[in-house]
Length: 146
Image 1 (cartoon, rainbow, N blue to C red):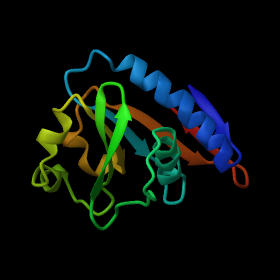
Image 2: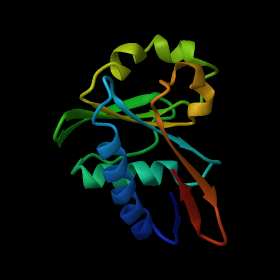
Image 3: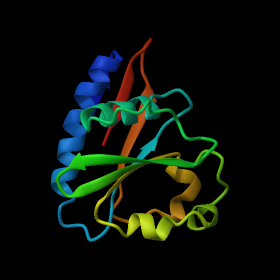
Image 4: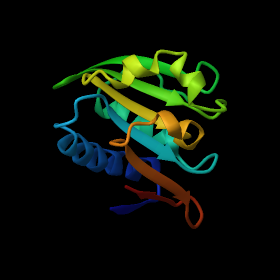
């Protein structure tokens, strides 16, 4: 599925569609629901995560967790307790993520995980992860592809 966003409002609408589709398709997973966000710097990975956080009624300000690696937010979504927002930009490989308790995080079915820069830790990303690719279009356009 491919969508074009012309604004943050468009991105919010697209986030709703993507989230509904991903959650519906991941009911049978034994572990966490993982959404990997790939794209160049400034493509809109954090903006998409912010849109999802608003949909999930998270009150905290969502910023890219580049320096702390990940942030955890409680959510009230049927079947889920926490949203994890992870930024692997500064990581060299998956071993660094494993040291932060990654196995416990991904093995919990009640976790919804958004990973920015998954290509940096690809060896520890479960095979059932969902991928959204975000690229720059014309002007302020963003192209989002599941």
